[in-house]
Image (cartoon, rainbow, N blue to C red; front, side, top):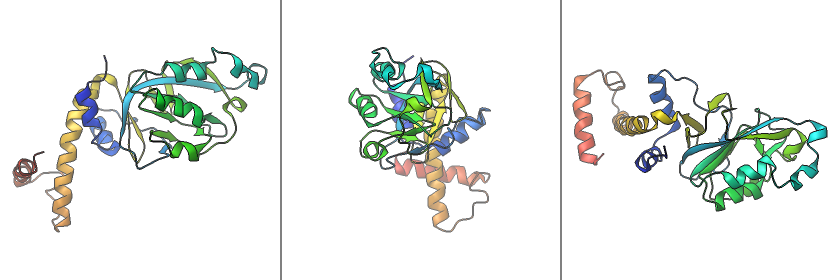
Length: 238
């Protein structure tokens, strides 16, 4: 099922930290992609369904630079097939010694209306990518072409990215800290809960800044805290 627009709007307003807590309540402990960071941390949240590309270790006799002349090369095809509003998620085996892609391919994803791109490897042309109004997350800059270490193989299959299982259609959320993966069937309920959690955390922060103790406040073990939060939320229109 396509991502509910209301769910997307809600996920645009919450943090990956809050989502981590929400999924932990449901028994999922490993949904935050490890060791990736945004190239441009000034952008709004990245939210979209996962469209995946899988690399395997390159074998020299199958991966010369001439393979890019093949119009069916999986990397190029994936860039052209990634749906509008989807996030391309690349399994680069956590190997950033060669680039997963460069600025031209990332620009093409942006122009096509995709929601963002994530790799557990690296991007070349990273200064140019950082200048785009397009969410891109990677481990670190990497100048060598992907062909030196990576062989593009599978499009839109289950992958591992930064030690997290990513299935096509999972909901991907990126913020200034990193990238989180929500199983598709949980996205709607998690989005609602995360908005509520964010409102409560904002209320708590205001109280802490006033000098209030966190005991009984966070978590709200004092009955009056819950009443105060309800009143605060009404006053704030949240």
